[in-house]
Length: 267
Image (tube, rainbow, N blue to C red; front, side, top):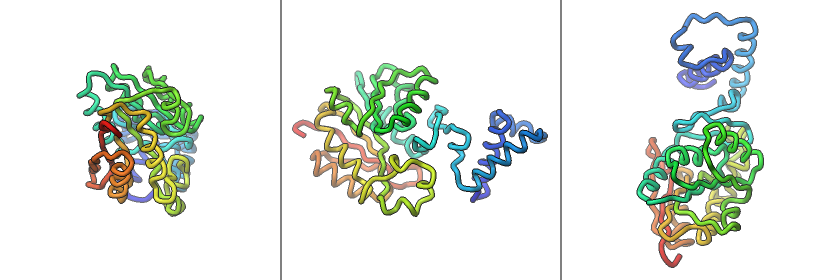
């Protein structure tokens, strides 16, 4: 486990999982003695982590915003950077009298669930091309009693086919270029379907932009997560496809992480 601070945190999380306890319990009880079975379980977990398997997949869950989500290798592990997209979506939605929102490529359901929890009066749709991913998202929604309409299909096509229109669209689509995937540790465990963005990393974003005229109401807001080196290309795509001015927002590290634009008349 690389990185002293990260390794210590990982070990604490895995030990808590082996004990069936919360991490805060460990912090308050530093002299715990493990049973033989607990020691064997902990050792197995540590070995899996040392081999590179993400902690979230080992314990089967990941925190996102104020939710604890079930995750499996069928879905991308939610990242803190995507919470910025959620916060911007919530800010925009609170300015609307009513909001129909869509999370395209929902995966574990992170964006859709957190949005629905904090905007209880909104109508929320979530799409994914993976049956297995949608099953995980539905499981997470049931855990929190959230009413979300989950639709199977490619990007926004399930919404378009049903003639649905939205006021807000958010998406964390695959944005890693195909040729870069094999060189990244993330590709070893997380689903290629959620990572592979085609030749330039923007294939899915390009396709969803083409679907927006059939889906978004005039004045609708669109938020798309991007790679840190994709701002100029994404901005150009939005302007060329929809003739819409585009804002680029940065993450906590100051890296370009999201494009935001509004659908205008005549697009």
